[in-house]
Image (cartoon, rainbow, N blue to C red; front, side, top):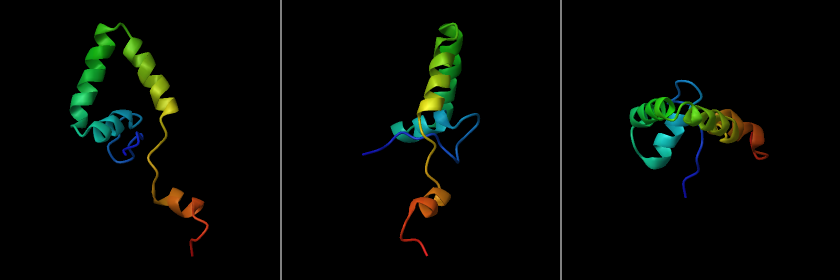
Length: 74
């Protein structure tokens, strides 16, 4: 089962669009264009949802989180 994370590698602003693209298996450019168009046509509602989601969705775990949380590390 996939989990939704903000991307560390495919990040322009917060990594949310890159994480959504990885979750749905599509190109991040499509998600970014949809966010820009949605923000324009919704008069900022999508921008508000984007900001809330960027705060709520956790950052993708990296190697440093693995070693800091792993009690069996060397």
